[in-house]
Image (cartoon, rainbow, N blue to C red):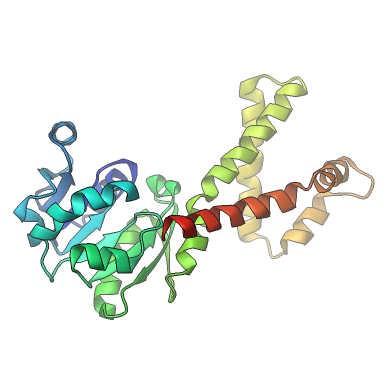
Length: 266
C-alpha cells in the first residue's frame, strides 16, 4: 500500500507514525506532502517518510491520500492537488467542517471518506467517526477503516450531517475534560495543596473514575449516588453545581460547538 498525507501538522504526523508503527506502510511508500519549501525541509529532517510538495506527481501513485490540512488552507492548495490526483486515489479528509460535496467539486473526485478524529489518537486511544461518499464501494471503506483504527476506536456513520455533532462531542471533547481537570486542580490549590499534590489527586481520581464508568455495571446516576451520601460533602458540591447550572452550561457549550461546526461547513 502507498499512502500520501497532505498537511503534516499534529494530526497528520500522528497518522504517519501510527501507520509506520503498525506496518501499514513502509517509509519508502509513505509520502508527506506540504504546501511550502520551508515546511518540506523541516519534514525531511524528521526522517518519517518521503517528502514532497502538493503538486508532486508521485501523489497519484498512492492508494490513499489523507487530507490533513487546515480547512482554511484547502482552497489554496486544491488547484495543485487536483492536477496530480487520479480516480484510483481514495481521499480521506480530516478537515473539520469540510463537506464531502465540497471536496468532490474542488478535486473532481468521488472516492472520498470524511473522518473526525480527536487528540488522544496520539496515544492510540482516539475516537474517530467517519462516513463516505455514497458511491464508494464497501471494500474501500473497510480499507480506510483499517487505517483509522491504528489510532484508536472507530465508528461508521450513515449520515454525514452527524459529523458536526461528532466534532462537538468527541472531536472537541478532550478540551472539555482538560477544562474540568484544570479547575479541579485549581480548587485543590485554593484549599492548601501545592500544584503537584493537587494534580496527582485529581488525575488519579479521574483515571479511576473513568475505569468505573467503563467497567461498573451501573448507570451514571447510580455511580453518582454511590458517592453522594445524603447531607454529605459530595452532595454539597453537586448542589452548588446545580445552583450554578454547571451541567446545563456544559451541555449548551457542546451544542454551541456543534452549531459552530455547522456554520463552518457552509
